[in-house]
Image (cartoon, rainbow, N blue to C red):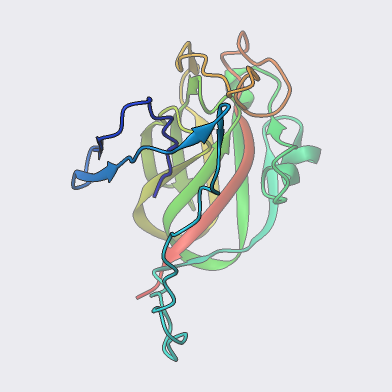
Length: 221
């Protein structure tokens, strides 16, 4: 789902908007612009004048409009290789705070204890510098490897598909130094730099593992 804004020229006619993305079916829409009478540079009618109203959606269905495919797993506690007293900030639902180690690869790990044993299917991580940095991670559940790979730059959360391992303790470890230099320095319309995590410069701390939010999920069968 997306939205776009068009500023037309002074000549009326057809405008075709096309959209495509990997893994999705391409789509297009054609819009017809019409001439508008102006007086002294001002339009004499409101833009919405004459637009039809559509009230045909009907009543809300009595049955659920969605199918639950996964459930969130509660975290009982967390410890870490460094700054363990701040480990809770990595799952506190506050995206202005995070947990980060001391920049050393040997301490770049954090371990979560779930409220109860579960089969972990997915882990959603919001990592600091999510637009510009990738993290090679090894994730274990009760000591058994559930993921070994590298995250990709995202607009926020990165969802990891795990091997199906049941347990209570989930350890996320930085395997090797994180890589920086991704992203294209996009800015908002007003010129403000787009968000890339918490307000701290980790660019030179390649052994840093910084987690803003960690969420764990089990598939609903």
